[in-house]
View 1 (cartoon, rainbow, N blue to C red):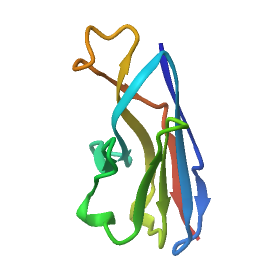
View 2 (spheres, helix red, strand yellow):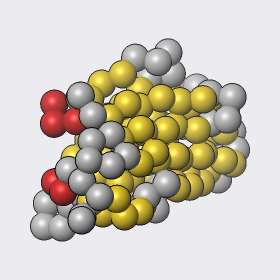
View 3 (cartoon, rainbow, N blue to C red):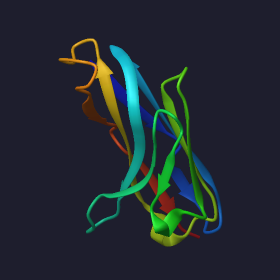
Length: 124
């Protein structure tokens, strides 16, 4: 019904930047919040940043000064600009979105969708 496709991960040197993108497609009626999570080896998945349909942003304290989340509602796409990357930012980054589809029971009953993940490696 819905697919989230991420792009933009890769290898970057410490201090470098990357921009992640996540495009949603399918039987979409509306997208509520969109978010980025990450999971490093041996660690639990953690919320990095989230943005509401109205543009309200929330960040994990560890990335507040480095990352910027944004969205293009016309393109059903969420972005994450990551600057001043550190080795501890290395992880698989996952896109998450709360989406109402044509198959949802009601407008107030969105479903949770996840992307497949994109690897971010920070190393010299």
